[in-house]
Image 1 (cartoon, rainbow, N blue to C red):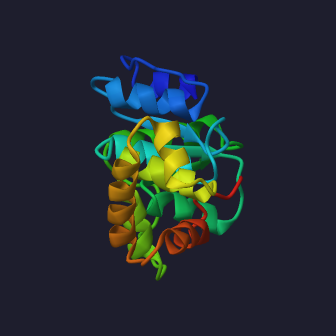
Image 2: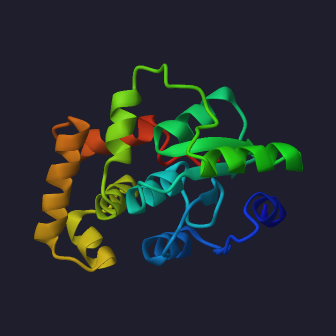
Length: 190
């Protein structure tokens, strides 16, 4: 990946991170960030949560997913949660360079959406980083009090975030919110 980025954008400064938490921290503070290359299996990521979290953190920065995950739906799911492209890990260097160049040029490397759940996926992609973190904690089965402790906020703040999440997803309770997120693969392991 470093070789491909260096050949496409020789002046690029490359930041590498080993976990999703480190990637989110780098994305939130990096100046001049132009592209995020993301592995779906990055430590700390659950299913497509890495895409959703980084997209929420920096919606203006294209995310190019690099993964060994297979299946026609994987690239589609990635795109609908905010990625502009999908590169299989076994792609040759030329294909990787072309995908990086397209992403840096503001062009998508995936076809337009055709699936009916697109609206809900766009709503998940519109969650703020904190809302997404709260939703991921709900997916882990945690109560508001536990979420508040884990995320360093008050229980009332967690409740406010849950209200917003449920409104955005068009559901009535946290169980439905978790089911919607789960149905979109937010918690699947790839």
